[in-house]
Image 1 (cartoon, rainbow over the protein chains, first blue to last red):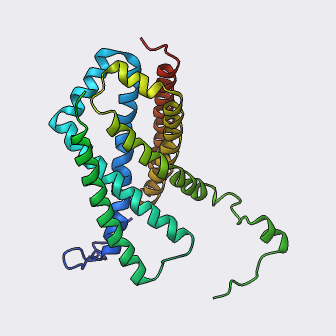
Image 2: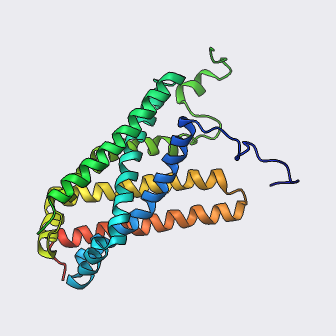
Image 3: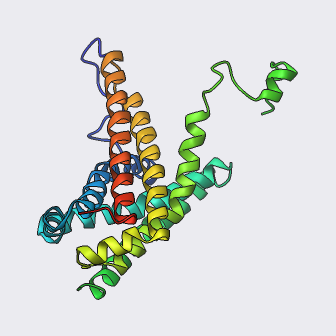
Length: 130
Length: 131
């Protein structure tokens, strides 16, 4: 509830971003994206059970440019949310909570998520075909 | 900083705060997260291994006992984890009480519905009753 036109804090135009807060926001953003992706997961399974028509609809959609772009985004989101989720679980044990460790862990997560995404798509394209 | 010992011995033994069940959702969020580490890795590898299969192949794969069990576990963990995760985000950013309640209820109901639909589809393929 804003009672007056006060300036925002943090001041977004001059705010200096940190890795830690950006990764925290990304964890939520990728979680929300994956949540939306669960609709596709269920659509895919239900279509498989329903018959050739619906199943063809899903595979056509997934093979389209929009489908591939979405799958690419979800692969990256899943890889990131998985790696950063493990980082969160480590924190939950009370370890690696100092500033240096949060930055080292953060960069490891970024590198691992990017590498996993590339591996998944390279192996995926190598395996493509009926 | 040592925690001040303000609680009764019984309170310490039971380990619950004044809300009694405040850590329940926090704990299940972590439990489903741990379960989802192997399940998500299995899911991605298994999907890659079955890219481009036709409908019969898809049903053979999803309906195989090991796959079906893994899919059902994945669906339960995913939708529990998603519902709790969305709830935390809603609680952080939506401050109008009625809207907040409505959104959390919607997330819960949609998650539950999608989970049941997905599990039913897997079972249908596993028991060969799919058309």
